[in-house]
Length: 152
Image 1 (cartoon, rainbow, N blue to C red):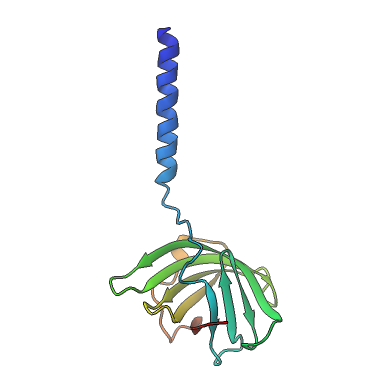
Image 2: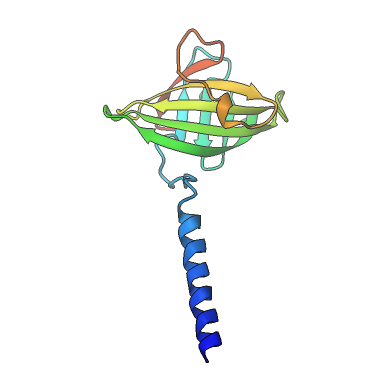
């Protein structure tokens, strides 16, 4: 009887430690209504429209276009909110169609507090590495982009 009680107690302790350990992994779980999701436009770029959804994105040559130029899968690694309300994301993924098919990337994206301006810096990478994220988003960066929220 003592042995079975000891096994039961040890099994319960192991189960609890596995559950607590799993919760502490720090992996961000995106919400269905992330500030990043939606339709973003900027007439200054060849891809004038970008639609970001949970797990991916699509780009288009015009705001009214329905033909996808690029498509990719994307995961949010982390999200932070600054004291002024700006939401920053670290994401990574891969282009799955279009001229950049197979190219992997890491993005640092920032959505202003108003929710209407998206800025980001992209880094093409050979393989995902948390050290490959840009440390800042600056307009002088070769891979800098700015888009504006659209109601489409």
